[in-house]
Image (cartoon, helix red, strand yellow):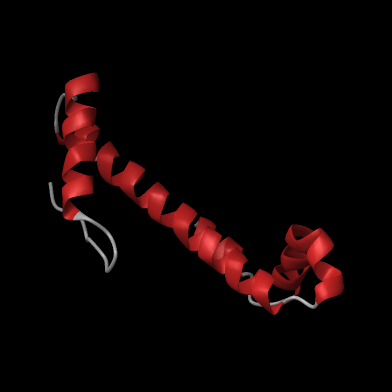
Length: 88
């Protein structure tokens, strides 16, 4: 199975996820093995979300950092809804 491995991602880690998945679940057919790609992409989306939050947090004024996630959510709701786009 081939996945789009991006900068700072590891083909070796992806291959290990496949090996572990096959060893544990014994997938039957391509549809089931493709679940590995979904697992891989979920990890990527988590990293994207984390990086976005870090960037947004760094841009917050000091008084908003006490309620950072709420402040970031409000910013996103008022703006281009970046998190909604990531979650699709």
